[in-house]
Length: 223
Image (tube, rainbow, N blue to C red; front, top):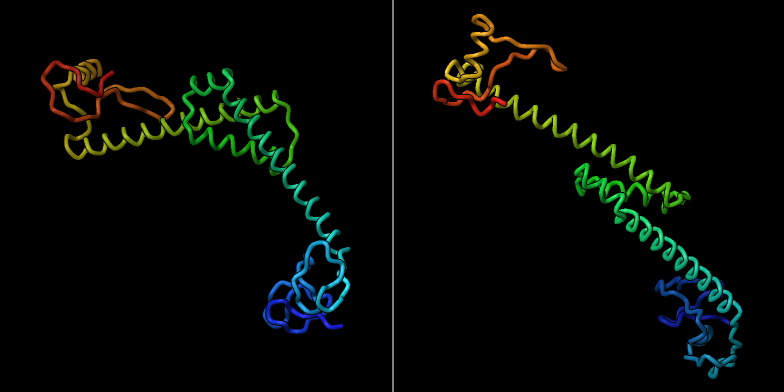
């Protein structure tokens, strides 16, 4: 006996999952007879129109598989939710919060560290105890502190260099002898500006702002 699509009534094979004429998904939920398309009740074992026997074995098997998949997905979601809760609780602990405050760690780095943990614990399914998670967070916070400090120093150097360049264009390189600091360095250096070596090489001890200043006063760049 032939089977028919319940959407366009095109003849289909028993093994077809979709109608080869209209693409409609073949109903396998036993709500319709696959032979004549008559709507059925759940308790019907034979079609009330043509008498075709309704095969429920595939449906029961599919329902079991779907239930198993659903349970697996729900279990995974529950485990992920538990892991995320653990991460949040550890970040909210006074020990970690104090480290964040002390090192002035910005929100971007905190989000980044949380994402690293999520990747390790959820994506890679690594097993870590609470103490191991704390140690990982502490290590990453220290890295973040160093990165922030490095970025701060770099920014300060950029600002200083910009001031120097602007000053060179305007006043020739330093405040001038009107600045008490420059005047004292000029006298101490016997008519030259003295300096010293540091990590950036030889640095002269003079001010760089190049702004107007009353004679004998320190400029704003002097510390």
